[in-house]
Image (cartoon, rainbow, N blue to C red; front, side):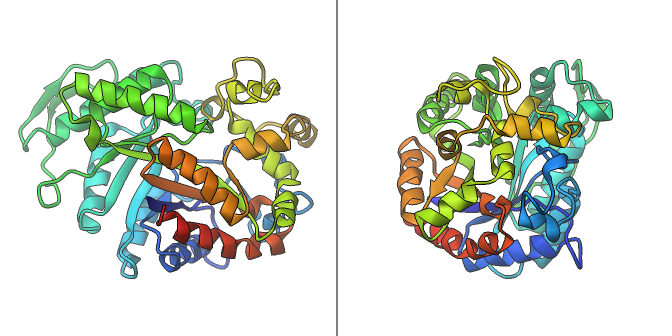
Length: 378
């Protein structure tokens, strides 16, 4: 098992990269294989609950929406990536807000700067990062498929002029002459969940990289669908890296884990799950039957009472099912289920910091680092 860590790249103090730099060094110390940054303009979280009475982290990070620009941060990390030489990745960039030619250029630039240690994580994006900014959200999957075809067409052009019809990204004498690092383009890991996205991943992806909450059983079924689509496209299905992005909530004892989960902020974070995951526990998603989860979540406008009422519907049993929750031994047992479902590169989000106590959030770093080291031996 390879293990990566995802940093939120939220602006810190006294420097905007203070948290990211600390988390990067923590990843090196824990002997992680990769370090990732997200691509968001704001968080998938109700800002009305980001207060010290709900999470101690609000005392040192006053905004949950102050996201730094990911590609700028990746370049900054590449320049500092001398210790550990971790792989760097974006988890995941957006084909709604970003023209695929620019993404193709940025990814190859990063590949050159990191000497081939960059991974392009990519997906449709979410409604919250597109619709409020005037980006059409009516056909995100169709737009994504055309973006992938555009990136591959530019990379495969050999520096020749490219002409390609497309309803979203038509190319007219387009030129892409930036060379691949040692003849290899950066691997593309696609965040796919629905049937059409799984087929697209099989056709274009070098890695399957879902991030929204689901189960190991669903992962195994979707990985089979990706590999079948790859085979249909004449590609080697076993060459696709099975990856996963998942949250971890841990503590040294069961009592510490229970204390971490006793948090309105933790429960609100679980609203990124789909109604299907809620129904599995006999619950209905507060946002309605059939709600798809993170992709359609737009929580910026919720007032405090609305956010609290939504979070109230999240049970401890559901919380435990949406990530790797428990003591280090329990987390490793759950991670083994994902390994058995096919996962070979697990990117972890440290959810412990969201708990009510800032001190407990800090002390949870020790069992979290222990999990990273032990995961590598799974």
